[in-house]
Image (cartoon, rainbow, N blue to C red; front, top):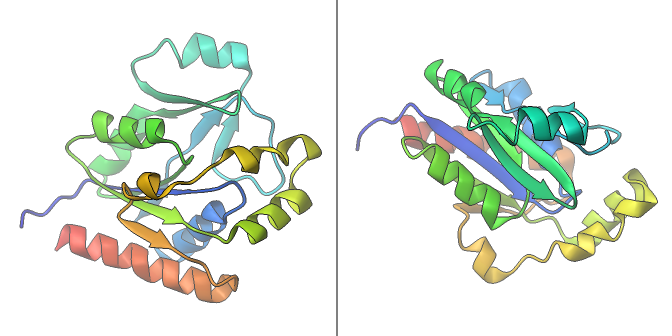
Length: 190
């Protein structure tokens, strides 16, 4: 097997599944990870990580018209990632890790834009009751109906390399997630 130094790990899951929390904790223990910052037109939320907030007008002017950006529109807001940042991170032998919405569009874009990279996809399958509780406690009222729209089907899950089911204990979940990331890196670079 040929060694591939270009590794992108995409972490997906419903809103409130714990994607960002697991990634932040993994980065504390793994200096080879670099988080792909996302530009968005949505309003900041409590505990957000890895976002740069810009106006819709600024996004339409600077991002959507550029070939140097990956774009998505989710729940009426734009999200984008700078391709140059991805390429620079991969060139420095870092593993790029990012959250993506549970959408075929975003997963497909990464595969198309970085065909030379090994892309591993993890779905965080947090129990729906836990997700609803987190969203209700942590998010504004107008976002509560959003989780009802995030239908996850068995066919959708087939595109993921791994389905991670948290126990609901952050220390144990974080340790398991870190082990999985390190195993993915080891298998990719071995």
